[in-house]
Image 1 (tube, rainbow, N blue to C red):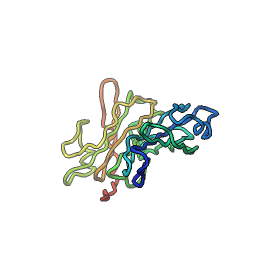
Image 2 (cartoon, rainbow, N blue to C red; image 1 turned 180 degrees about the vertical axis):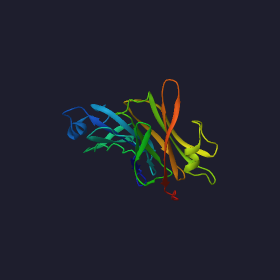
Image 3 (tube, rainbow, N blue to C red; image 1 turned 45 degrees about the vertical axis):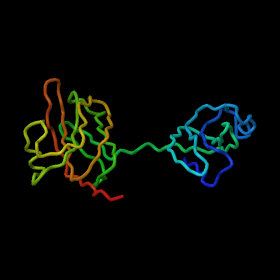
Image 4 (tube, rainbow, N blue to C red; image 1 turned 135 degrees about the vertical axis):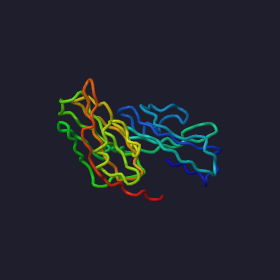
Length: 220
């Protein structure tokens, strides 16, 4: 939200607030209130105050439900000089995961795009809701240094991280029969997914998937 009073000089300070009203209340009820009376709001989502005449200010406000109304405020003294609304609020679409990893026994499978984005947060999913062969599951997102290849990664005998890899994210110890989301932030690629299974006694490197391309970061 931006409050711009760069061309205003009538009042010393300005402000605005974003609210939802009690059920059955509307803009006419808000405007009918005395200028200094507290409105019958359900949620105060945020606002800005003490904006000096001849200036402007911008702020991010998270709105969860609507419709919303905007109170326009001035000082001194603080009072409501106008109100706007109702303004509808669209439901945010749930963020889609960048990719999903599933298991079939010891093997894991990648369901996602051929190229992953770089320089931004992505959501990854490990879905083992249909698995019960192992106590828990997991996977790591890595990239390789130097001239190392997927063959080197497959041949690595340990579940410890090889020194010639860079770890971007680790989704670890996820119980059988569950689905788990994790965040990752990729910088370069290609990346490889190293999948793990675990019993009560041991952890196994069970599979490797890749290479998966990572888009080059673009300059802002």
